Image (cartoon, rainbow, N blue to C red; front, side):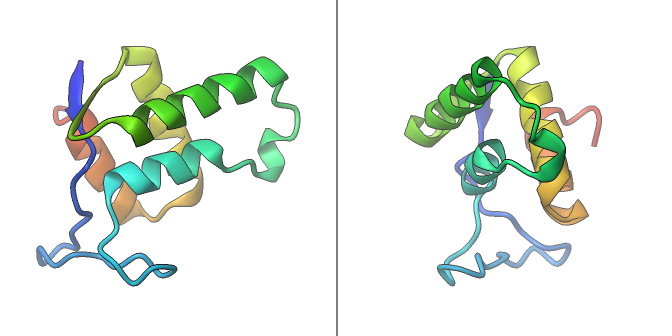
Length: 103
């Protein structure tokens, strides 16, 4: 499924949310790659294969220009990872982009 992740994260008023590190508008693409590459305490038992799968998916999203072709399983993994480390606003915007029927 082709999905657009290279879009800005907007607050409820439609204004761009700024990335606290860069000061630039945050994107779903950057949030997704950060979440996939993050390893929290609850991920301590992640196998090497799971780490490689997350790395490969982060690379796939990062390297995509405007749209990225994602499987249903990849969408589930992205949503799980983003849910762990980001606010409800970022997670909600991601769900709107990946699975509009759920949002």
